[in-house]
Image 1 (cartoon, one colour):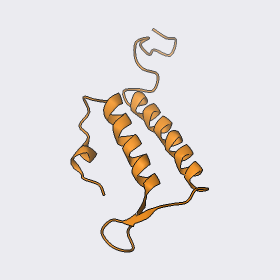
Image 2 (cartoon, helix red, strand yellow; image 1 turned 90 degrees about the horizontal axis):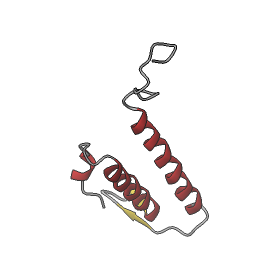
Image 3 (cartoon, rainbow, N blue to C red; image 1 turned 180 degrees about the vertical axis):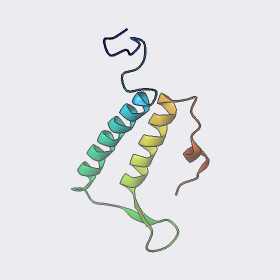
Length: 86
């Protein structure tokens, strides 16, 4: 046991620490992709209306996040895997 009474085996940040860390790392990776895309030419399409725009970068980042979460947490229920994107 640690001096503060915590069990040595317990994760430092509790049960959600791994999920939080994965989210932070994915956000950083997505940010790098988006930052790089800011200086590149964009191909834009629409989703449900002319005002609902989506770029290749949007698709790329969405795919990264979904695939990495499914890979990292295969036993978690992923509601976004049921949603069909453009």
